[in-house]
Image 1 (cartoon, protein in one colour):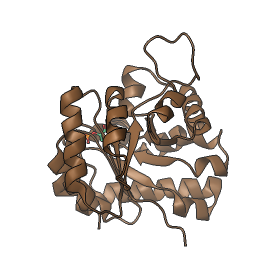
Image 2: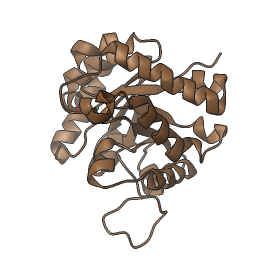
Image 3: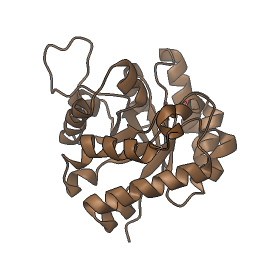
Length: 254
Ligand code: PEP
């Protein structure tokens, strides 16, 4: 029987020079050991090729990028395409992160185009979404999340395409703030998200969908969050920058 993947993904954001990144990849690799969790490292672009060489024989560690352009190539100074990412060994790409939505004004429509580009190049999108604090305080979090999923994903992709995506619920008020959603809040939202997927693509697809939680996950809170039935792992920002913390989080799973 197929079961959904459990994933712990590290989003380094814009951190680590070449040498520091190389050291972090090797430190994680050397202390990870066998794991039932798929570990994904998402460093800045400059680290992807050297990391793919360091991780060549490490089965349960995959590489992801933090963004890609929606077009295949051309005059887009400073950008990088999904096929370029694929060519350096990426298997995943984070799309829709709240920092991209906020600072780079990425719209629902643009995100659809990026997800399409990723899928066309055999990259699995880790699609991020989540409400801001004012929406949570107004108890509108379900409405916001439903709209984000509908407008970027549900209205545009078939069940077969959706099967290659990973979802990451990241309440914006919990990202980099030290404030984590409680296990109960995370479970409630993940269950709601799975019900939306079931309504759109059917119960079997919903059951197989990996839904990550992101927002101030640390070694101290990972076990309880990952213990919730609809939380299938985490997208880790700050704590992915220290090998010991990141590895401890991957071990919090089982
Ligand atoms: C993130 O950037 O996706 C994230 C969850 O960050 P942090 O773990 O630092 O809150």
